Length: 141
Image 1: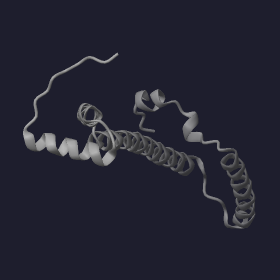
Image 2: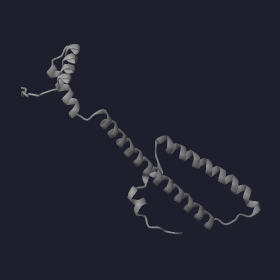
Image 3: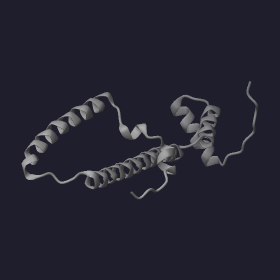
Image 4: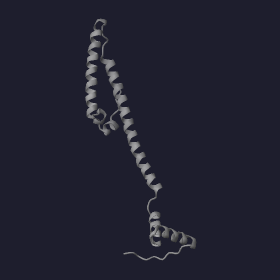
């Protein structure tokens, strides 16, 4: 069911509507209905703006995760280096060659374990809950 509505157009606009209706083989009512529907619906600019807004929101979340991960990585590395330098006594010269060989062996094991985790898609950083990072007390060791 359709409701009737009487509308008045300037003669030139009515002529353009009639010409378009003739070319498209549609009724003048169909042309006016399509024009009003187009006017009332969000236009391309609004849709593009909404798409850009969604993309910017997604990029903002990705940047926040990157900032968190980089900060966490830097703090983890700094804490490890401080701990390692604090507790590791210097080696005598005659023990350095054996220690270097053992270090290379342990490093190879580390690289293999890291490779397995990466192949499985596991990430240490993803195991740390977001709220733990935000609420962690500052502890200068």
